[in-house]
Length: 106
Image 1 (cartoon, rainbow, N blue to C red):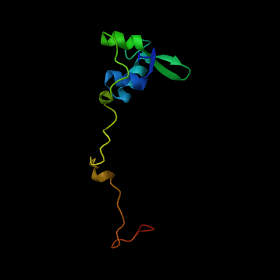
Image 2 (cartoon, rainbow, N blue to C red):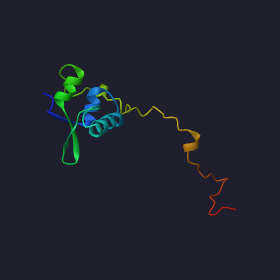
Image 3 (cartoon, rainbow, N blue to C red):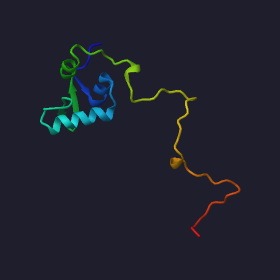
Image 4 (cartoon, rainbow, N blue to C red):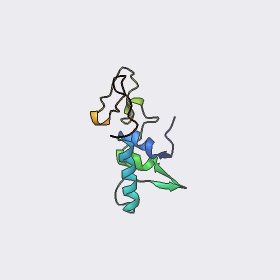
């Protein structure tokens, strides 16, 4: 299957193996510098699209399509046994039977 002529910014991020936030920042940089820097994009209505040819010029050759599942650095693996450590300042405090819920501050 050949690559489409225009990719979404997220698809371009996947091809470039960068995060979507970085890709959107590069797209905004392109728009704000009138094309002097950043990731080449065009507006299609309210959406941004990255020309495939611009990506191929950046990479120096044709892109692989569809991007492999392992090339997406944004999404973590779906492993239910993987636990993410939550900093203590972000943990919610649970009421225990020994500690009744307070309705107002004393």
